[in-house]
Image (cartoon, rainbow, N blue to C red; front, top):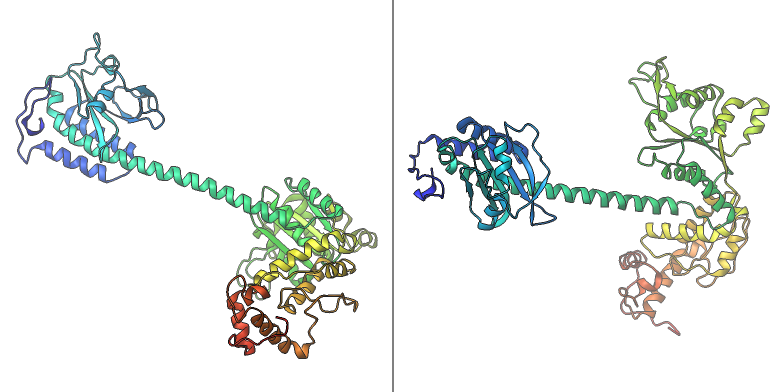
Length: 531
């Protein structure tokens, strides 16, 4: 059947069919199958089955114009009962092919019968070799865009191509829609893959920045520590971090984890010195329901929570003897037993331990197992105290001031050279933790653009520029006076680069809140001598 009763070259004229013609039902079935899925392979397979069910051994193939070279086409899919393993994925030049002729003319290219001995197009000898006698190549066009061709071949039977031509033409239109949808899905998937790669790269960049900035290493001693961590991190070796309280042992343990292949898995910190002896085994290894009073359900321990990742055992020297035995088994066999169960549970955990105690002396006294000590101290890392790396004080201080100022929604204050020298001269028995806490305290007492210090540990007072240290009883008055002086200096202006908020290193909204709190009115500004 031919649309509108117009004859096609090489095909006899077929009369228009009635509305109840079975060919109409074939087209409706084709519409239903195309709309049922966006999977192009499924569309072609069902289309081939449909045509073969009604028209015999039909070969159906989809060719797509190459996205790399528009002068070539790629064989996307083939449904062929006579060719079990078609050359899907191969490409061919459009010039000299029936597919190329169909795309150039934007109308079907009909070859009936095929002439394998005197071929007009490259497809003829290839199809004839598989026993086909005719071919029609339909251009696949969607919204005026050429996408490729739908090729339908039949065995050499009189009039068979003519009977299915109109059905095939309408099916080609549906396949064009399906191919377009498939290309759109493919493009979305490509963009998603690209986005996923970019996202992964961005996450890795952020992770790199975080892990590189986690430890300030200006001194030679800390640079050596960080380098040792970089060397140990990629392995599964147990690391023992030793150092005084407050030196940053947990931060270094996180660095080991983040530089390791386990960075995407959990990092589980446990302070063994902070858990009561009666609960420590349950906390580390978990327990079964009914194991003790109050155990109303099974609960996984920290080792199970860290499976695939890293567990950080802080203050490992405080572990009681019963826990030391269990820890030794985990390190040797990588298995645990929940409290109340004798069934072993295998865990894949990287262990990083830390202590501020002298484990060698504890081993000599018999309070710490020697075999556990040697299992833990495979790769020891010694963290020097802050008094032995004074070069790090300034970098650490700048980092802490910036972080805590950001949490207060203000700019970091300026720190004078006198204050830096005073901070570097302190022994800091509490190490990095003490320095951070001290600077956070100083930041609260310094609402202006300059950092002012309270008394340093030991009673020393550095020479600091204005504003001076505020006595607790006069704090509100001093803050109010500071805001009023800033407003007077800026002519009552709060916002802008020359406003009072910028002068004080505060956000405008923060300054307005403080003005309301201390009862300061921006207009009219108070005239200050010399302002």
